[in-house]
Amino acid sequence: MKTIGIIVPCYNEAAVLPLFYKETSAVMDALADTYQTEFIFVDDGSADDTLRKITELALTDARVKYISFSRNFGKEAAMLAGMEYAVKHDFICIIDADLQHSPEIIPQMLSYVDRQGYDVAASRRADREGEAKFKSFLSGGFYKVINRISETKISDSAQDFRVMKKDVVKAILAMPEHNRFSKGIFSWVGFNVKWISHENRERAAGETKWSLTGLLKYAIDGILGFTFAPLKLTFWCAGLSLLAAVVSLLYGVIKNIAVADYELLLPLILAAVFSLGALILLCIGILGEYLARTYTEVKNRPKYIIAKTNTNVTYFTSEGE
Image (cartoon, rainbow, N blue to C red; front, side, top):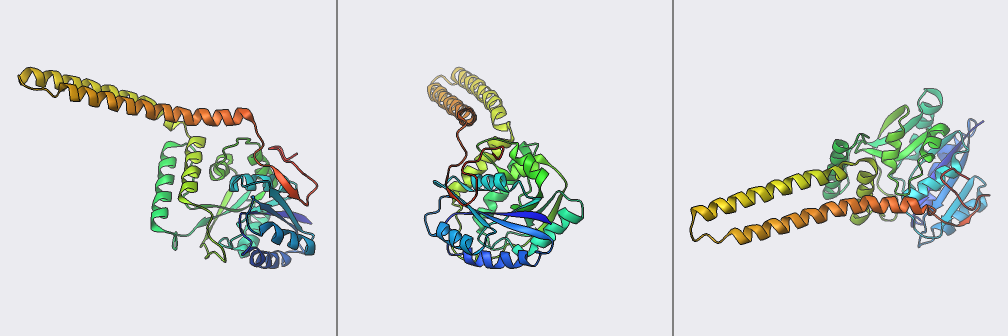
Protein backbone atom coordinates (compact mmCIF):
# COMPACT_ATOMS: atom_id res chain seq x y z
CA MET A 1 0.00 0.00 0.00
CA LYS A 2 1.31 3.44 -0.93
CA THR A 3 1.64 6.11 1.72
CA ILE A 4 0.90 9.83 1.81
CA GLY A 5 1.99 12.37 4.38
CA ILE A 6 -0.30 15.38 4.76
CA ILE A 7 1.59 18.41 6.10
CA VAL A 8 -0.54 20.99 7.89
CA PRO A 9 1.26 24.20 8.97
CA CYS A 10 -0.61 25.72 11.93
CA TYR A 11 -0.36 29.09 13.62
CA ASN A 12 -3.16 29.99 16.03
CA GLU A 13 -5.63 27.67 14.30
CA ALA A 14 -7.33 26.18 17.37
CA ALA A 15 -10.79 27.31 16.25
CA VAL A 16 -10.62 25.58 12.88
CA LEU A 17 -8.56 22.44 13.57
CA PRO A 18 -11.47 20.14 14.58
CA LEU A 19 -13.34 21.12 11.40
CA PHE A 20 -10.23 20.61 9.27
CA TYR A 21 -9.49 17.21 10.78
CA LYS A 22 -13.07 16.01 10.40
CA GLU A 23 -13.31 17.03 6.75
CA THR A 24 -9.83 15.92 5.69
CA SER A 25 -9.90 12.60 7.53
CA ALA A 26 -13.25 11.80 5.87
CA VAL A 27 -11.68 12.38 2.47
CA MET A 28 -8.66 10.21 3.28
CA ASP A 29 -10.76 7.46 4.91
CA ALA A 30 -12.46 7.01 1.55
CA LEU A 31 -9.00 6.23 0.08
CA ALA A 32 -7.95 3.87 2.89
CA ASP A 33 -7.94 0.82 0.59
CA THR A 34 -5.29 2.43 -1.62
CA TYR A 35 -3.31 4.88 0.51
CA GLN A 36 -2.08 4.80 4.08
CA THR A 37 -2.33 8.33 5.47
CA GLU A 38 -0.27 10.15 8.07
CA PHE A 39 -1.13 13.66 9.24
CA ILE A 40 1.82 15.88 10.18
CA PHE A 41 0.62 18.96 12.02
CA VAL A 42 3.38 21.56 12.45
CA ASP A 43 2.57 24.02 15.23
CA ASP A 44 4.49 27.20 14.43
CA GLY A 45 4.72 28.53 17.98
CA SER A 46 0.99 29.21 18.35
CA ALA A 47 -0.18 31.36 21.26
CA ASP A 48 -3.64 29.76 21.49
CA ASP A 49 -4.77 26.16 22.11
CA THR A 50 -3.55 24.86 18.75
CA LEU A 51 -1.04 22.42 20.26
CA ARG A 52 -3.58 21.13 22.79
CA LYS A 53 -6.11 20.51 20.01
CA ILE A 54 -3.50 18.61 18.00
CA THR A 55 -2.40 16.46 20.94
CA GLU A 56 -6.04 15.60 21.63
CA LEU A 57 -6.38 14.43 18.02
CA ALA A 58 -3.18 12.38 18.38
CA LEU A 59 -4.64 10.56 21.39
CA THR A 60 -7.61 9.36 19.35
CA ASP A 61 -5.92 8.81 15.97
CA ALA A 62 -2.52 7.13 15.64
CA ARG A 63 -2.14 8.68 12.18
CA VAL A 64 -1.76 12.14 13.73
CA LYS A 65 1.81 13.29 14.31
CA TYR A 66 2.81 16.73 15.48
CA ILE A 67 5.88 18.91 15.56
CA SER A 68 5.71 21.98 17.78
CA PHE A 69 8.24 24.80 17.47
CA SER A 70 9.75 26.62 20.45
CA ARG A 71 8.52 29.91 18.95
CA ASN A 72 7.03 31.30 15.75
CA PHE A 73 9.52 30.66 12.94
CA GLY A 74 7.09 31.29 10.06
CA LYS A 75 5.16 29.20 7.58
CA GLU A 76 8.22 28.54 5.43
CA ALA A 77 9.97 26.84 8.36
CA ALA A 78 6.79 24.90 9.18
CA MET A 79 6.51 23.57 5.63
CA LEU A 80 10.21 22.68 5.66
CA ALA A 81 9.92 20.76 8.92
CA GLY A 82 6.91 18.90 7.60
CA MET A 83 8.64 17.95 4.36
CA GLU A 84 11.78 16.81 6.16
CA TYR A 85 9.72 14.40 8.25
CA ALA A 86 7.25 13.37 5.53
CA VAL A 87 9.86 12.65 2.83
CA LYS A 88 9.69 8.98 3.85
CA HIS A 89 6.24 8.76 2.23
CA ASP A 90 5.52 7.99 -1.42
CA PHE A 91 3.50 11.18 -1.75
CA ILE A 92 3.56 14.40 0.24
CA CYS A 93 0.70 16.88 0.44
CA ILE A 94 0.85 20.44 1.80
CA ILE A 95 -2.45 22.02 2.80
CA ASP A 96 -3.46 24.95 5.02
CA ALA A 97 -5.49 24.31 8.16
CA ASP A 98 -8.01 27.12 7.57
CA LEU A 99 -10.03 25.08 5.02
CA GLN A 100 -9.55 27.70 2.31
CA HIS A 101 -7.79 24.85 0.53
CA SER A 102 -10.40 22.21 -0.28
CA PRO A 103 -9.44 18.72 1.01
CA GLU A 104 -11.91 17.12 -1.40
CA ILE A 105 -9.56 17.73 -4.35
CA ILE A 106 -6.73 15.71 -2.77
CA PRO A 107 -7.98 12.46 -4.45
CA GLN A 108 -7.87 14.25 -7.82
CA MET A 109 -4.33 15.42 -7.11
CA LEU A 110 -3.28 11.90 -6.11
CA SER A 111 -4.74 10.53 -9.32
CA TYR A 112 -2.57 12.88 -11.39
CA VAL A 113 0.70 12.03 -9.63
CA ASP A 114 0.06 8.33 -9.05
CA ARG A 115 -1.66 7.27 -12.26
CA GLN A 116 -1.17 9.91 -14.93
CA GLY A 117 2.57 10.47 -14.88
CA TYR A 118 2.77 13.88 -13.23
CA ASP A 119 5.34 14.61 -10.51
CA VAL A 120 3.33 17.39 -8.88
CA ALA A 121 -0.35 18.30 -8.78
CA ALA A 122 -0.65 21.89 -7.58
CA SER A 123 -3.55 24.26 -7.16
CA ARG A 124 -3.79 27.80 -8.39
CA ARG A 125 -6.51 30.30 -7.68
CA ALA A 126 -9.23 30.61 -10.27
CA ASP A 127 -9.70 34.27 -9.26
CA ARG A 128 -9.10 36.64 -6.37
CA GLU A 129 -12.74 37.12 -5.50
CA GLY A 130 -13.20 37.94 -1.84
CA GLU A 131 -9.67 39.27 -1.39
CA ALA A 132 -9.10 42.92 -0.50
CA LYS A 133 -8.55 44.96 -3.66
CA PHE A 134 -5.46 46.69 -2.27
CA LYS A 135 -3.91 43.34 -1.33
CA SER A 136 -4.75 41.92 -4.77
CA PHE A 137 -3.18 44.98 -6.42
CA LEU A 138 0.04 44.63 -4.41
CA SER A 139 0.20 40.87 -4.97
CA GLY A 140 -0.35 41.20 -8.71
CA GLY A 141 2.25 43.95 -8.93
CA PHE A 142 4.83 41.88 -7.06
CA TYR A 143 4.50 38.88 -9.37
CA LYS A 144 4.68 41.08 -12.46
CA VAL A 145 7.91 42.60 -11.18
CA ILE A 146 9.57 39.35 -10.11
CA ASN A 147 8.64 37.58 -13.36
CA ARG A 148 10.15 40.43 -15.34
CA ILE A 149 13.47 40.50 -13.48
CA SER A 150 13.90 36.81 -12.59
CA GLU A 151 14.57 33.78 -14.77
CA THR A 152 12.38 31.69 -12.47
CA LYS A 153 8.78 32.32 -13.49
CA ILE A 154 6.18 32.18 -10.73
CA SER A 155 2.45 32.24 -11.32
CA ASP A 156 0.67 34.92 -9.27
CA SER A 157 -2.16 32.46 -8.69
CA ALA A 158 0.02 29.51 -7.57
CA GLN A 159 -0.68 28.16 -4.09
CA ASP A 160 1.28 26.07 -1.61
CA PHE A 161 -1.55 23.49 -1.73
CA ARG A 162 -0.11 20.56 -3.68
CA VAL A 163 0.66 16.84 -3.78
CA MET A 164 4.22 15.86 -4.70
CA LYS A 165 6.17 12.69 -5.29
CA LYS A 166 8.99 11.84 -2.92
CA ASP A 167 11.70 12.73 -5.49
CA VAL A 168 10.31 16.24 -5.84
CA VAL A 169 10.43 16.80 -2.10
CA LYS A 170 13.99 15.47 -1.99
CA ALA A 171 14.96 18.04 -4.62
CA ILE A 172 13.31 20.80 -2.57
CA LEU A 173 15.11 19.70 0.60
CA ALA A 174 18.42 19.80 -1.28
CA MET A 175 18.09 23.61 -1.29
CA PRO A 176 19.37 24.55 2.19
CA GLU A 177 18.90 28.33 2.24
CA HIS A 178 17.52 29.94 5.38
CA ASN A 179 15.56 32.76 3.75
CA ARG A 180 13.13 30.51 1.92
CA PHE A 181 10.54 31.48 -0.67
CA SER A 182 8.77 28.20 -1.37
CA LYS A 183 6.76 29.38 -4.36
CA GLY A 184 10.03 30.22 -6.07
CA ILE A 185 11.65 26.97 -4.94
CA PHE A 186 8.69 24.91 -6.20
CA SER A 187 9.05 26.59 -9.58
CA TRP A 188 12.86 26.41 -9.68
CA VAL A 189 13.11 22.62 -9.15
CA GLY A 190 10.88 22.07 -12.19
CA PHE A 191 9.39 18.60 -12.77
CA ASN A 192 6.16 17.79 -14.56
CA VAL A 193 3.40 19.84 -12.88
CA LYS A 194 -0.34 19.48 -13.33
CA TRP A 195 -2.13 22.71 -12.42
CA ILE A 196 -5.62 22.48 -10.98
CA SER A 197 -7.87 25.53 -10.92
CA HIS A 198 -9.14 26.05 -7.40
CA GLU A 199 -11.58 28.54 -5.94
CA ASN A 200 -10.59 29.54 -2.44
CA ARG A 201 -13.26 28.93 0.16
CA GLU A 202 -14.04 31.29 2.98
CA ARG A 203 -11.90 30.75 6.05
CA ALA A 204 -13.85 28.33 8.27
CA ALA A 205 -12.81 30.05 11.51
CA GLY A 206 -10.19 32.40 12.89
CA GLU A 207 -8.43 35.24 11.11
CA THR A 208 -5.76 35.46 8.45
CA LYS A 209 -2.20 35.48 9.83
CA TRP A 210 -0.75 37.43 6.88
CA SER A 211 -0.28 41.11 7.72
CA LEU A 212 0.83 43.72 5.20
CA THR A 213 4.25 43.77 6.87
CA GLY A 214 4.51 39.98 6.66
CA LEU A 215 3.57 39.98 2.98
CA LEU A 216 6.14 42.71 2.30
CA LYS A 217 8.87 40.66 3.97
CA TYR A 218 7.75 37.61 1.99
CA ALA A 219 7.98 39.63 -1.23
CA ILE A 220 11.49 40.85 -0.36
CA ASP A 221 12.62 37.27 0.33
CA GLY A 222 11.23 36.26 -3.06
CA ILE A 223 12.96 39.04 -4.97
CA LEU A 224 16.32 38.74 -3.23
CA GLY A 225 16.21 34.95 -3.32
CA PHE A 226 15.56 34.53 -7.04
CA THR A 227 17.13 37.45 -8.87
CA PHE A 228 20.28 39.60 -8.88
CA ALA A 229 18.43 42.50 -10.51
CA PRO A 230 18.62 44.71 -7.39
CA LEU A 231 22.41 44.40 -7.50
CA LYS A 232 22.44 45.44 -11.16
CA LEU A 233 20.23 48.38 -10.22
CA THR A 234 23.29 49.86 -8.52
CA PHE A 235 25.00 50.40 -11.87
CA TRP A 236 21.90 52.03 -13.37
CA CYS A 237 21.60 54.34 -10.39
CA ALA A 238 25.26 55.26 -10.66
CA GLY A 239 24.89 56.04 -14.37
CA LEU A 240 21.75 58.10 -13.89
CA SER A 241 23.24 60.05 -11.00
CA LEU A 242 26.34 60.81 -13.07
CA LEU A 243 24.18 61.99 -15.98
CA ALA A 244 22.10 64.14 -13.64
CA ALA A 245 25.25 65.68 -12.16
CA VAL A 246 26.63 66.53 -15.62
CA VAL A 247 23.34 68.02 -16.82
CA SER A 248 22.97 70.07 -13.62
CA LEU A 249 26.52 71.36 -13.92
CA LEU A 250 26.17 72.32 -17.59
CA TYR A 251 22.82 73.99 -16.97
CA GLY A 252 24.19 75.99 -14.06
CA VAL A 253 27.32 77.11 -15.93
CA ILE A 254 25.41 78.10 -19.07
CA LYS A 255 22.70 79.90 -17.11
CA ASN A 256 25.31 81.73 -15.06
CA ILE A 257 27.03 82.96 -18.22
CA ALA A 258 23.80 83.98 -19.93
CA VAL A 259 22.23 85.77 -16.94
CA ALA A 260 24.48 88.13 -14.99
CA ASP A 261 22.47 88.07 -11.75
CA TYR A 262 21.74 84.38 -11.82
CA GLU A 263 22.41 82.81 -8.38
CA LEU A 264 20.81 79.36 -8.70
CA LEU A 265 24.11 77.55 -9.15
CA LEU A 266 24.61 76.78 -5.47
CA PRO A 267 21.09 75.31 -5.02
CA LEU A 268 21.65 73.17 -8.10
CA ILE A 269 24.90 71.85 -6.71
CA LEU A 270 23.30 71.13 -3.36
CA ALA A 271 20.39 69.33 -5.04
CA ALA A 272 22.82 67.26 -7.07
CA VAL A 273 24.84 66.37 -3.96
CA PHE A 274 21.74 65.36 -2.00
CA SER A 275 20.39 63.32 -4.92
CA LEU A 276 23.70 61.55 -5.33
CA GLY A 277 23.82 60.85 -1.61
CA ALA A 278 20.31 59.35 -1.70
CA LEU A 279 21.23 57.09 -4.60
CA ILE A 280 24.41 55.97 -2.86
CA LEU A 281 22.47 55.13 0.27
CA LEU A 282 19.92 53.22 -1.83
CA CYS A 283 22.65 51.17 -3.46
CA ILE A 284 24.34 50.50 -0.13
CA GLY A 285 20.99 49.38 1.25
CA ILE A 286 20.52 46.88 -1.59
CA LEU A 287 24.04 45.52 -1.10
CA GLY A 288 23.35 45.35 2.64
CA GLU A 289 20.28 43.19 2.10
CA TYR A 290 22.30 40.65 0.12
CA LEU A 291 25.15 40.82 2.63
CA ALA A 292 22.70 40.22 5.50
CA ARG A 293 21.41 37.10 3.77
CA THR A 294 24.96 35.88 3.19
CA TYR A 295 25.67 36.46 6.87
CA THR A 296 22.59 34.45 7.83
CA GLU A 297 23.60 31.54 5.61
CA VAL A 298 27.18 31.55 6.94
CA LYS A 299 25.98 31.38 10.57
CA ASN A 300 24.08 28.23 9.60
CA ARG A 301 21.66 28.42 12.51
CA PRO A 302 18.84 25.85 12.59
CA LYS A 303 15.82 27.01 10.60
CA TYR A 304 13.57 26.06 13.50
CA ILE A 305 13.75 24.51 16.98
CA ILE A 306 11.38 21.76 18.09
CA ALA A 307 9.98 22.01 21.61
CA LYS A 308 7.54 19.05 21.55
CA THR A 309 6.76 16.22 19.16
CA ASN A 310 5.26 12.74 19.19
CA THR A 311 7.57 11.60 16.39
CA ASN A 312 10.84 9.76 17.00
CA VAL A 313 12.85 12.75 15.75
CA THR A 314 13.66 15.73 17.96
CA TYR A 315 15.75 17.81 15.56
CA PHE A 316 15.72 18.21 11.82
CA THR A 317 18.33 19.39 9.34
CA SER A 318 17.87 20.23 5.68
CA GLU A 319 18.89 16.64 4.91
CA GLY A 320 16.02 15.31 7.03
CA GLU A 321 18.17 13.70 9.72
